[in-house]
Each structure stands twice: as structure tokens, then as C-alpha cells.
Image 1 (tube, one colour):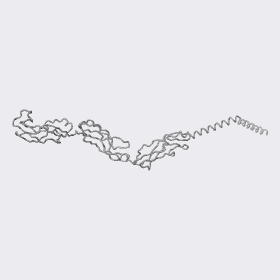
Image 2 (cartoon, rainbow, N blue to C red; image 1 turned 60 degrees about the vertical axis):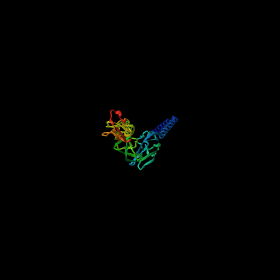
Image 3 (cartoon, rainbow, N blue to C red; image 1 turned 30 degrees about the vertical axis):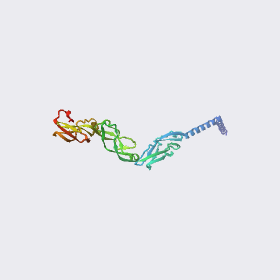
Image 4 (cartoon, one colour; image 1 turned 135 degrees about the vertical axis):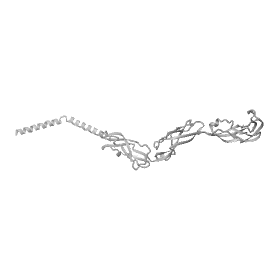
Length: 330
């Protein structure tokens, strides 16, 4: 019995000791607990309210066959995501890329809205801002047609020459692209073909001019030949002496000069010597009075446009000529 009372007394003393230990510095312990709870609440509130800005790719998919996008829609969109900092730190812009599915879109302009639900962000985070949140697509029908090729000449040929012909092989090119650009085409120009100072035909390979990045050509270059000829013109010569050929007698010609208009290369006409161009032939003629047709002696490549007079009167005397000074004298 005494032993049981001793055990009860011992247990009671232990409880008193524990109670005294628990109540010792109770104010400091409560203060520490309150500080710990406040710190936890501060950290937890900061985790939930974090914000991160990301630049996310935009993928355009399922554009119907035969259509093409004309304008340049953005390749990226800027977003802001809120949520716990630990989750936000794991976000990868490539893995949350937004996909714009274009199935069913038609020709013309279409406005596509970007919504927060399009981004594959973790549960517990929210997309709160999107820029831009509206994308405009300009779509057109893709087509192909054959278009003539035009040679773009650069420079001037030599003085007195002109371009007489241009030969391009092949003469057309198949052009593909948006219908709004392909349909109005009347020709496709080449890069400049330099003809400066040429006097002969020139042939070389020349590239097509790429003036619209939206167009596609079936070939990149063509063989071009530029042909040149001398410039042809008319020139009038006045007071051209009418010469008498094959005459051994003294003579007189009335009129003794005429005028003539000649057609030919302008360079040759500029330097043409008119001596001997107009003449009459007195071969086998006896002294006396003769009406003779005026004949013309022209270099190759020239022709008469008009002449005056077409006849002259030749008076041949009975005495022989001694010198050429007797010409045109009685």
C-alpha cells in the first residue's frame, strides 16, 4: 500500500514539473508562434500573387489548300501569367505556344481573337494579359499564269545606230502567287541589259527582276539577243553638179546642177561626197543638141527619194575638148 502511494506521489511531482516547464516563458513562446504564423502567411501570399511576363510563339496551322497569307501576322505574342512563384518558374514559352487553326478560313481579311484558354499553362496559374489579343490575317487565292518577258535595256547604242529587234528565249515565264498580284501582270521585266555603245548584235544570259517577294517564277534567267542597225534617214543635197561622161567634144549642160534627196544610213549621208552622183552619158553621141535623162550613181545601201531635174539638155560642139575647163562652156 505504501508502495502505491509512493508511485502516485512521484507521478504527481512529475506532472507539476512538466506544467512548470510549459508555463515558463509563456509570453515569449506565444510571440514566436505568432511571428512564425505571420511569416508563413506572408510567404504564402507572395507565392500566390507572383506575375511573370513571357514572349510566346504563335503557330498557324491548317490553312486550306490553294490559299496563301498576304500580310505578315505576328510570330510571337506577349503574355502575363499570375500564380505561385514555384509554378511560374517552370513555365517554358515553347511548351505553351498558342496555335491558330485556320481550317475554314476564306479569301479576304479575317480577325482572330487570342483567348487565355488557348495557352497550356499549369493548373493554379492564370493568363491575365495578352498583347496583341487580336490578329488580322489577309488571305488570298494562290494561282499560276504565263506572263510575257520584257527586256529592260540600259544605256544607249552607238551614235547613228538603233535597236532593231529583241529576241528572248523563252519568251514567257509561269508566275505563281496571290491572285491580286498575278492577275494584273502584263509583263515580267529582266534585270538591266547594258547596250551602251554597241554597233553589233549582242547576246547574253540575263536574270529576271525579282520585284515582288510574294511571286514565284518558273525560271530565273533567259537568253536575250539585241539586234542593232544603222539609223536610216533622208538628206537633201542641193546644187549638185551634173557631170557629162564619155564626151570628147566641148559641151554645155542646161541646167548644169540639180538637187537630190537620198535615203540611207545617217552616218554615211553625213560624209557623202556628191561628186559624180548626177550624170548624163554622151557615149556614141554626135555633136548637136540632145535631151538626156539624168542618171544617179549611189553607194550601196542608199536609194533615191526624189531628184530634180530628171532631164537636162546637152549641147555638143564640133571642136574637141582640150581640158576639163571647157566643161559647161560654149
